[in-house]
Length: 440
Image (cartoon, rainbow, N blue to C red; front, side):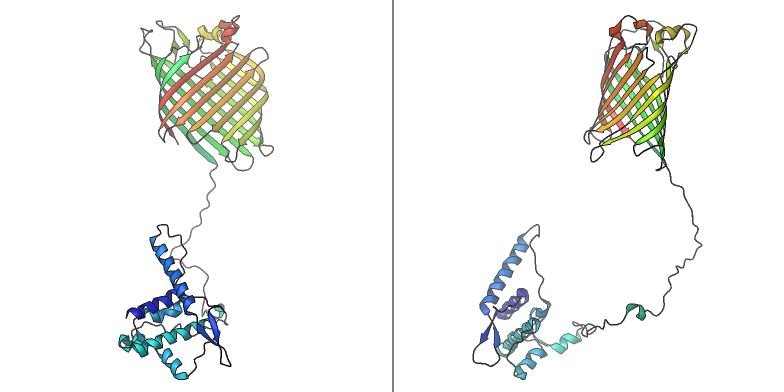
């Protein structure tokens, strides 16, 4: 039994692709008889066995494994008396064929014949018994005729779909609007320059920021962007005995920009920017208001051109540059006693100016955790200049936790209270915060 199994494994796993070197012609016969080179078969068996062992021991299973040859199925079953080996012995034709497959069958029949003659007690069943068990399939024993066309074999066809219910076609217009936003609740460390016009003192405080964006793009020529920025922060003040909390970050700004495409990234644009503060601010230990909502309020109407910016393979640096050669600016102050503080003549509540305006908004995604958002705003009536540069560097630890570095340099030489004090026209604000952050 051991010998039979060894012979069966050798022939079933070898799947030898015989060549002219594998079969040696035997002299003394008119037609050369091909015989098996046993040494080549043994080497092929050892090589395949080593491959199986390496494949079994390999975790990655990267070694190529050749499937067993199906022509050796008779060697893998239980010892069975087949008809083909007996027919070959009785035919008296000892020569092998030069056809590759017939050659394999010829030598397999020789090996089976040797088992029938030398070890007949190992043969436990016949081929007819195996067939009766349903091991072989008769439906694939005949060659299929592929000459006919498949379309001719189809008796009937109906390509019209049938449904039980009535189909109702609904046409939906595409949604060109996109809504997004960001909100954060931060604990901050604040630093103010001495001349910061809204007041404040160095301290630790809490700050809330909400940014809401609603954009329209019809994917043709028209775009309309709307951005609402809300910032409100409070601090505890030890120097002010009249109130426990004082506002620090106190700003609300709305920007809308309508664009009509002139070229690929160049648009004719009309931008409107409105900015004021949220709650009133007081001088320490007094009830004197230094600034309030609509005191002041700056409105800028800037028709001009807008250029869209996008750099990098993944467009990590994006932005817009809006240039208005002639913009209209109005500063309004609701409180009469504060008009002089914001460059408005007494007896008036507003001042009107014309001049160039430039707004540059950029967003740089330095990496997945660090994002730098910046805005540069400049307006001049050729007598005074107003320049603001807001910078927010966001450090994201995960989806909800982040830290923010806020830098806000500002130059404004229109304030009357700093007239003849050129050094105080430049103002600066900074805070470093850490807390909750959520994008939607």
